[in-house]
Image (cartoon, rainbow, N blue to C red; front, side, top):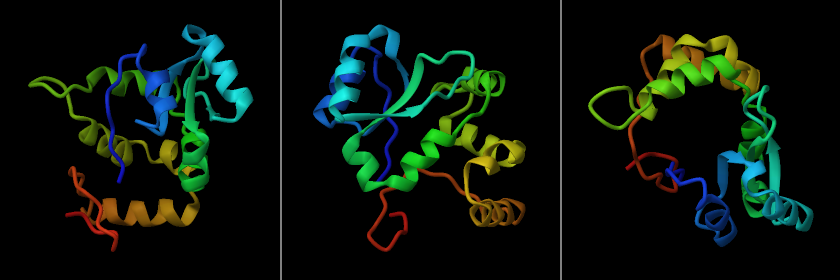
Length: 153
């Protein structure tokens, strides 16, 4: 099951160390440099790259266990490079309140409107299948718990 959680920046390193989360998609290594160096050198966490080209200290990091358990997801997370402007524009509109858009709608917006961007992050057969489902209107994002057969409950 994949669950997105919001963490305060100060709480993120401890949450990753405890195993409360497996992946941080926006970790500022300049704010916790000693922790970051210690953890990456020991192999407890792995650095998957930076999502922002102009801000190399903002990193995507994961537990070593996550990379072992889900190597395809770790590889995907390291490839995601939306570019500073497109990510900032999308992120600026995300909220859970009455204004803005939900993260699920933001994801669908990227899938529908920025094909050239996201299709570079996945194998061609995955991109083709996703494009066909989007064109056929068979895209539905909703919170769910994954059952062992791969279906939402």
